[in-house]
Amino acid sequence: MAQITLHIGAPRTGTTVLQKYIFPHIQNSSYCGKRPHHSALIHSWGLRDAGQFFAGLPAGGMTQELREQALRYILTMSFHLALESPPREDAVRAFLSEAISRLVRVAVGGSVLLSTERLLDTAASLNGSHLVDPGRDVVFPVHPLAKACTAAGITPRIVVCLREPVSYLASKYSRTSFQRTAGGLPEVVWFFWTGPIVNL
Image (cartoon, rainbow, N blue to C red; front, side, top):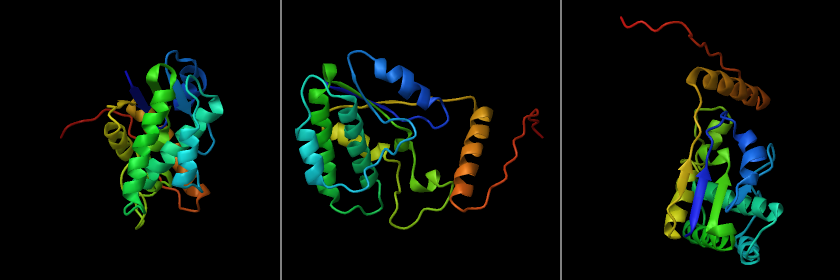
């Protein structure tokens, strides 16, 4: 039976460890992930290139490079569909469903695991900003990807890892602060209260 699992993070919950040491060793499923700390998007792409790539996927087993490239195409199309007014929306949506169908058909056991935190990010959240620029992504890319899976006749399983809230916020703050200062934005000062909470 065709199956697709979307591991979407959440960020700061050990995703890199899972991607490096756990997911590549899962049996009876094709793990499609990216190398940690490498871009998960294709910045120059077209439907013709994507069509040739997915049509050429070999049945019965894909190399790590092919699985990584499949993830990059799928994520790029999902990001495209998350835009406020994406060009060629209907064509990209239809092709994304076809690409998922093809990937599952050639996958080990008809099962695919896609893992990337980028499905749970927007440009605003990646840049540590609360502002959404016109024409930028307006929904998390996991939404159009889940819809494309459903259109392909596959109900996706979505896996989210969680973390104790205070340590998560401290880690997220540290990462967001780094991203903001690297991007030229002012650092935001947050305070964490670790004492008892008293209802007044």
